[in-house]
Length: 160
Image (cartoon, rainbow, N blue to C red):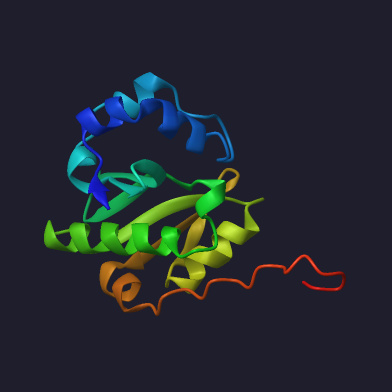
């Protein structure tokens, strides 16, 4: 896990744009990746494996919370605990810098993401347009048991 700094964003920009393509909604442009937000470079993280970016969480301060603006895990790294690792690291960093909670929005059509966040202790706080507003205290995220890695199909007929 590495801090997502402006320099790291520049260095990994092609891969960040690639991983971001799977998110619901408009993909971020290079300008959005490099834009300053209060606390963004302090709170955001990159998940790096074998020298390449496997995931990211972009967050900034919003009141007494760290707000997730963008989060994604590369398709090749999904189902291996990477998303939980990213959010636990964000919660650790946020708590250490005085934030009490983590907030985010999840699109109403993204049921798998909503279930994932709920397993980490997030609760729905309302709706804004086509998004659920969700939050969790940093302590709850940190106390959440590591998420089980789903069994992968074996490729045999009838295996699931």
